[in-house]
Length: 261
Length: 290
Image 1 (cartoon, chains in turn orange, purple):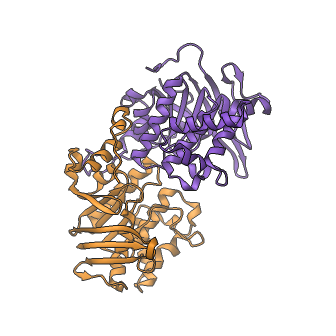
Image 2 (cartoon, rainbow over the protein chains, first blue to last red):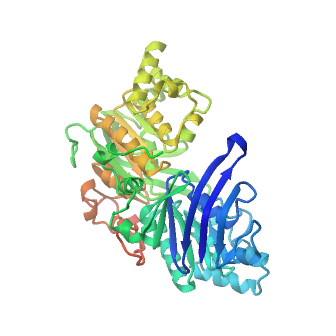
Image 3 (spheres, rainbow over the protein chains, first blue to last red):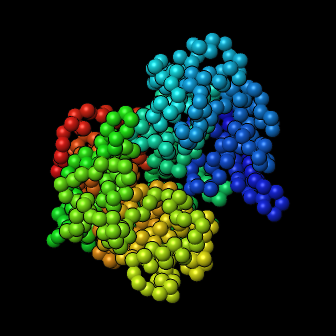
């Protein structure tokens, strides 16, 4: 479904060039969830944005990317833009503050000149568990979890096959996170969606994904099955350290931490 | 190591029936309603979701709740009444007796002062020392928080250091007047997980070495359970449960159990996570289950 070969991303020019993504390759089957995990600055979000075509104006992107046998060009096709949708991290920054929920959700449908927009908005809201009373509210009138549901509804309205999820729950309380993760799992089952999930939280990745890549300094350190993560048997020392750290505070383990540069 | 459960001897801090409320155009908001606890020389965690009143509890202790009505039966630091203390006394207490580590070093450090002069300022406010001694003490402190090039960092501005180093600088600044209590409000939430633990280790070592009390405010249950000695769980401005950190998994209150259950786990499968069902009765019943 998704095939990425030798992806490199450079920001800036000349001496100030920053090599943000280094030779990243992976492929994902239809209906799978793929996790990208790493610390801040590891390049995981940049990979997602490069795939979505959000970087072509601000960075140099090279490598081969294909989605459903369609080789991606610098200017993405209309079909790609319908087929691939994205949910962003910050539910406060990613919804237009002066648009109603209705306007926000309907916008992609208008862009893609879909029919029966009214019906589609109602259905999308229903699917993310928001009743019709939310339709004409503004983002500041609803909670963080509800906003993230609106973002998901906006992604669903074009009837996509792939949703790119960039830290979709890291700004939410854990009880709300559980609701949003459950919603994402249900939508995946019902629509046969393919997900790429970017997160710094190994437990969220373990819960949602079948396969994951661990990134560090722009490169993939290790790609493994979720089972390997659950068994606590990653191959690379960097991943093992990340795993140890995510298990909680352990004074003795911290002294053994190494710098991976 | 640390005193577990009952706090030994005279507690450093005593809070009894603390209320913090705000008058807003839409009515009175009760941020904290009836919180009581004691703090000894230990690591006390306060955990809760956003809006539970955990930060307001921490800020009320230092009198940092501008515009709020704060009342309590008792709010004492080693016998000194913090509620009715004069501004002068409070200025003396803040920093020297009780100090606070804020969440984000990016916003809590002064961007136009060098790291060295900020830490020195914290020292000089509370002691009559020479500039030279302040500099020495500052460098010593930077070494104590495991900063490898203290001389370089001393001259650096906050934007020139990483998030993890920024938070170590905050710790250095708060520790240099040798307070008895540190209130840390989400001190490492903005940091990557490995850096977070390294910063906590620095804090932990200093607290044990100096026999201080720590109030650690966080939304991260796992982190609090592994880092602290004792935990208060807050919901809707109240402490709904308190327990030893090691016994968090045996928590009895349905809210605490609900919070623990809705966390995805590394080992768990992909089944739906149990969703927290909020019971209005949690807000009605005062006091705590012990």
